[in-house]
Amino acid sequence: MKTNFGSVTEAVRMLENGGVVLVPTETVVGLVSTEAGLQKIYNLKGRDADKPVALLCRSTEEAFSLSDEAPNIARSLASRFWPGSLTMILKARHGNVNVGLRVPLGTVRGLLEAYGAPLYATSANVSGEEAPRALGGLREASSKVRTWC
Image (cartoon, rainbow, N blue to C red):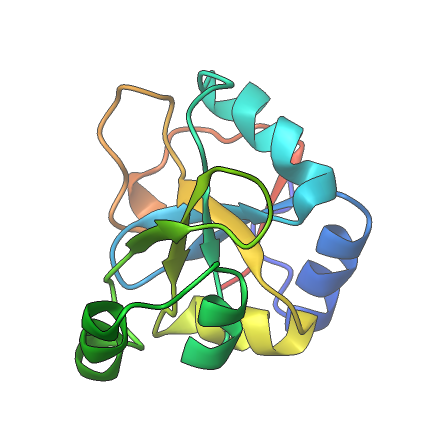
């Protein structure tokens, strides 16, 4: 298994082809994908299909554009904690559901910028197990997952 592509270009290509990318975030090691790769994330993690996955965004404006409304408290929290590790749960723009939104720091931010749109993200662990805090803390990953760091 190739564990480091060494380029954001290859990670973007994987995402564009419906792949899942393993990437460090400011909180834990994460799995990111587009909507096309979301089912792969659920399968890799053994995650309950009813459990939503948050979206990482490039900016506060992009995050709030995905919500039905951004209350003043959400705007205040965003100005203080974004970019950063805060995930806000807001009413989604489409449908009668909520969406988790975050504007991250670090390595994953570069991937978001290069990809040019929000990405679904969750921790890179089997559901119910502890989330890895560093790439070195991962057990052998599936050959379907590629790492960019």
